Image: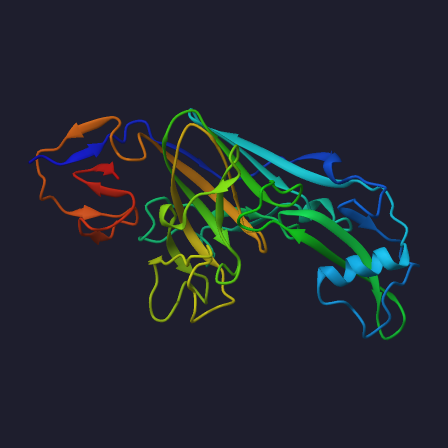
Length: 331
């Protein structure tokens, strides 16, 4: 029986390079009410916490603010966005750095042809060398900006936030995330730099329903950044998502991963984010077609031809994800 494959003629690619960011005032977090508001900005001369009593969780901060009637000030966080598009995909990248951050901390360029964070080895079909990432500003609902004191009784700036979590019924009000809108169904391969995904979830949320795609629909292949991609004597490999959307990097728990995050999409809008760590982007590669692999179907003559993954590695028919056979991609 002839194999079936999706035509690759209409594939669309975008990769990060020199970008122009747009600065705007984030109005959704502006507030003057410290009892119901999600955002607090306390002057430096207001010393809420003596040296040695710095709170270790957000509930302590909230309790102190409420019990002491701390003044709350309206303030304007700034967000920095850039956009990219192909024939079928529109992307908006959003970064909301902390109140005291400079504009150049919103997006930082990294990588390069010879960098050990470049997707530029023989394993990489999509050779992306540059990525951009935020320095701070996790996806969150609330922003608490206050001061501790150090041993010299000097003010020390602190920030805590109400982080977005899997299962939240609202979308984050601030932080870093990537919003993709698709005009047709297909599959997205997103080049990503993920900081410490062993402890921070990597989530794709369908915007209208606010539901996260199931873990089973996500896949990731790439490298662990550790002195030139070395990871337990392995280099490029497929990584395993846990049920909580973290990735098993158990032997190098504090190392970033870089590679290709893949997931199926419909003609909808999706948000990609890491709720508690930095997520950078190299680029994206969109393959139109029914995510079930039924659209734009062609019959192939050699059903026994070798099968490869997107990295060019030979796999068998049980492999889950985007596969290449006879020069064609299929699901």
